[in-house]
Amino acid sequence: MHDRADLRLPASEAPARCADMDSASVPAASSDAQLARAWAAGDERAFAAIVDRHAGAIYNRCRMALGSADADDATQAVFLVLARRPQQAADSPVLVGWLMAVAGNVVRNAWRDRRRRR
Image 1: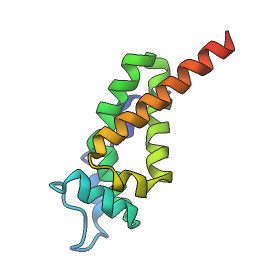
Image 2: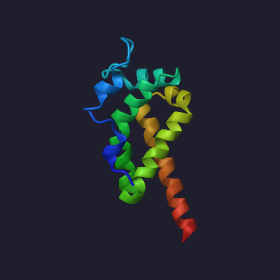
Image 3: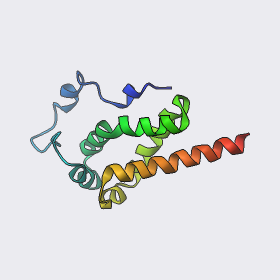
């Protein structure tokens, strides 16, 4: 299992990872809507910014519902959905609301899987 901190890029590594980016890099002050649209257009830096911005809240939502043991996997599942459905996220009026709805679905699926295994 990974610690929640593993989901975030350490600040000390950020300059090294961003050194090859040009002036069109994603600014930290970009709104969620701008980031979602950029991700839907294929900008991987926007995806990284979304994960960095919302991973903690999504992790906490999953941890409160599932406990620490399954929260990491559930958090990763939420961002896999974002990776696979960028346009759906971009079309959502509020990105964090969309991410929380996906987290709720992931949590319900995890609960269902637990009941089936019993």
